[in-house]
Length: 160
Image (cartoon, rainbow, N blue to C red):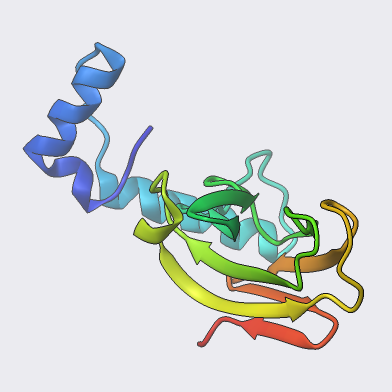
């Protein structure tokens, strides 16, 4: 069930129809569905049991780009939050002196077409063979879906 104001747009309805090969339902009021979902969440937060759950998910993936224009997902689209992940980033080439890392958000197949949230270079203390130097990137989606990431010596936090 898709809800929200956009579901009233003819183009959205046609896209749904073409993908699912079914006519989208028109008997659900989008605003009412959103209000009912908010009521279920309020009941859950206040401690009343309803037997229903509302799940908050992110709409766009958060990725890391370590190789030229290749995004590697940290949090896929539709990941529920809050959530935490740790990603290990290794050197791709022999003798690599720095690990260049970009944190990106978006659904494009090429990292250059996504929004760059932040980037940094991690200097490799002792360059060696490929896949021997590594850093751990600790990533978090908080209860408001704000993304943050950190390593030793580097930190990114979403601006409010």
